[in-house]
Length: 199
Image (tube, rainbow, N blue to C red):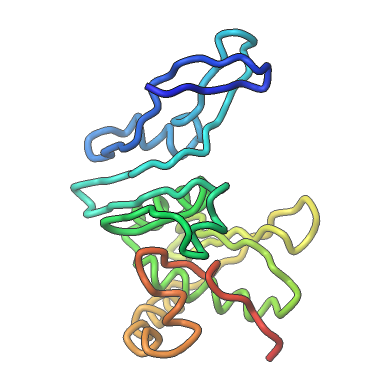
């Protein structure tokens, strides 16, 4: 149990899970995807509160082990000032969790997906810092959502499966060179660890 304080400034007790196992529970998986898993309704005013809290998400059948660092702790984690640990992967914030769940659902290598995202960022150029998220697979094509190129718009780009396979094959070499080795270093495998510079 934990205490949640609402915007109405009243507090209430709630069962806040610290870990969840997904194998055999399609309901929990769906609630994670639609954002209702860590959502609570204030009994005093009816306001819905979506918690940004640490959470370990595992799936024994898929060999998945993800620890969610709250988004408000992003900078502290990246600076090495927080003590979050993980047996598998770390993500920061709910959006990164959703992306990682989609990657695992499609049986993709998250390192190869991050390589593709890096290539897309380089193509966008320095001074442009969009957020790129894997969305899913459609007709054997990888779909990525791009947020931040234009105000209030989400772009969508399709990448052929052949590009993904090429990225998978490049992984052993890329793990040895910068900036790829930084991006691909577990437990936080992410392009968010590097900045794109002018080429």
